[in-house]
Amino acid sequence: MTYTQTSPARTDAPATTPQYSLTKILSTWAVATVPMGVLAFVVGPAVIPRTSLHPGLVHWILMVVGMAWLFVVSLAVLRRELGGLHWPRVRERIWLNLPRDPRTGRPRRVLLWWVVPAIAANVAGGYLATRLDGGWATVLPDALREPWYTDPGVLADPQFQGQWWILGLALTSFAFNYLLGEELLFRGVLLPRMAGVFGRWDWVANTVLFGLYHVHKIWVWPSMITSSFGYAWAARRYRSLWMGVITHAVEGFFVVLVLMVLLGWYP
Image (cartoon, rainbow, N blue to C red; front, side, top):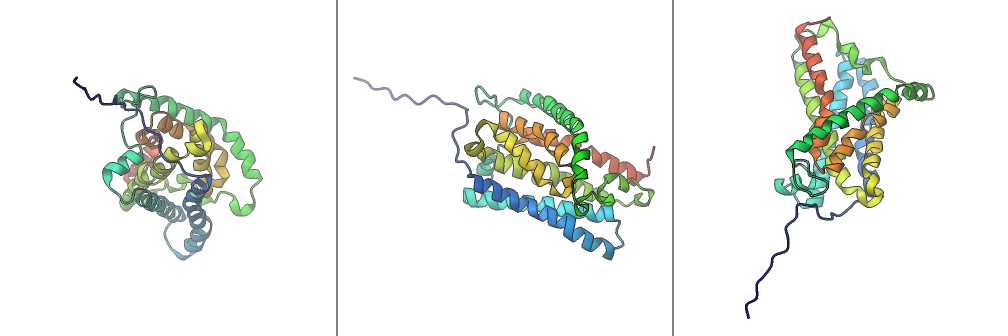
């Protein structure tokens, strides 16, 4: 009698992965969030009167420092969890792959087009929350009201023409905002481990935590939340960090505006 060994059918569907506890989720969020508040409301006001640098640039630099801290936190969490930072394991852990078909689990490049409705949802959510922002801002104490120098528009000034180091700041901000900082931590580290607590609504919880992380923009918390659902939804549904990165990076158009200011191109 001849016995034939049959290998199990191969599937590309993701296996069940270990999940974080609520305590782990909230503690990771706090480690990322608290420094942003300290930089915005303590360090910034202390440094601005003691430097000749424009207050808007001081604030921007501090926010970049805060987002770089998210990168450090992400690496520390991944290193401890994976026993090292071996690239193949890190890439799999943070969903750094092509979007996967929700039914078959197979990667499909064409699914990248789903960033379009995700972006549209963010735009619609932000627009609908503008009135909520106004009402929310009225109940905040004076210490948490928006300082004038946090408005990016104050940097559209002829005095910055030709100061090319600001372009380097903009590109660094772009990298840590849309890939190495916010997206890596929230959609790469946290989101894949939140279903154990929040189930099918893990992407909603991730969005709320992401919005509240913007304590340095507490005056626009409502719109920060409602304009961010597309990031987590796309990343979670298609199990791909790239979906969140691309959806988020649309905001990176500000780099073009910075370039226009540096070149002295004003309307």
